[in-house]
Length: 299
Image 1 (cartoon, rainbow, N blue to C red):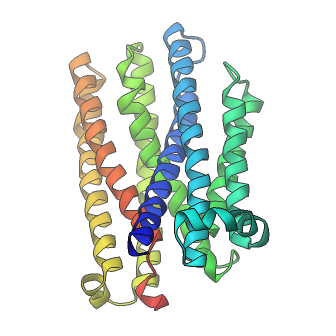
Image 2 (cartoon, rainbow, N blue to C red):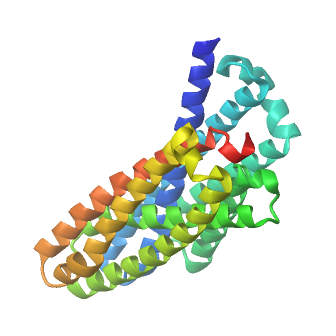
C-alpha cells in the first residue's frame, strides 16, 4: 500500500507540473502572437510553428488534467491509482473539485480546437484568451486558496499569482526556444523584445506581491519556513525565482540593448532566456510539490 501511495504522490505532482507547463506555453504563445508583425513572411512561418507547439502543449495539458483528477480521487479516497479508477466518475460528477477540474479541462479543449485553425482571426484569439482566463480562475479555486472560498483575498492572490507566473514563464520559454530562433527583421526583433521585457517585469511585480502575501498566509511564521517540508520547498521556489529575476535583470539592462545592435546580441539573449526557462520550470515544479502538501497554518 505504501508503494501505491508513493505512486499517487508522483502522479499528483507530475500531472500538476505538466498541466501548468502546458498552460504557461499557451499563455506565452498567445502573447508572442500579439507582438509579432502580422504582415511578415517570417512571422507567418513562426505563427505556424507556434500553432504546432500549441497543439502539443494543449494536448499534454488536457491529458495531465485527467491524470490530476484521477490522482485527486486516490488522495480523497485514500487508495491506490488502480482503485481510484472505480471511483473516478463519482468524484468528477459529485464533488465541487471534480466539477472545477472538468471545467478547467474543458477550457483547454477549447484552446486545442481553436488552435487547429491556421492563422486564427482576432475574434478567435479573443476566445483563446477567455478560455485561458477560465482555466486560470478555475485552477486557482482547486488549490489551498480555493478552500477558503472564491470571494476571498487568498483566492484572488492565488489567481493573480498563477496568471503572472504563467505569463512570465510562458513568454520567456516561447521567446527563448522558438521566436528568437527565427531571423526577424531588426526593428521587429527590438519591438518584440521590448514588449516581452515590459510584460515580464509587470508579471514579476505581481508575483512578488501575491507571493509574499500567500506565502505568509500559509506558512504563518519564520520558524515554519525551516522546520517544515512545505516551508523548505517554498524557500527553494523563492530561490529559483530570485535567480531567474537576476538573469531577467541582466537581459533587460544589458542583453536587450546589445540584441538591438547585432545578431550575436540576440544569441546571448536567447541563451539567457533558455537558462531562465529552466529556473522557472524548477519553480513550477516546486509549486506543484507545494500543492500536494498541507500548509503549516492548515495543520
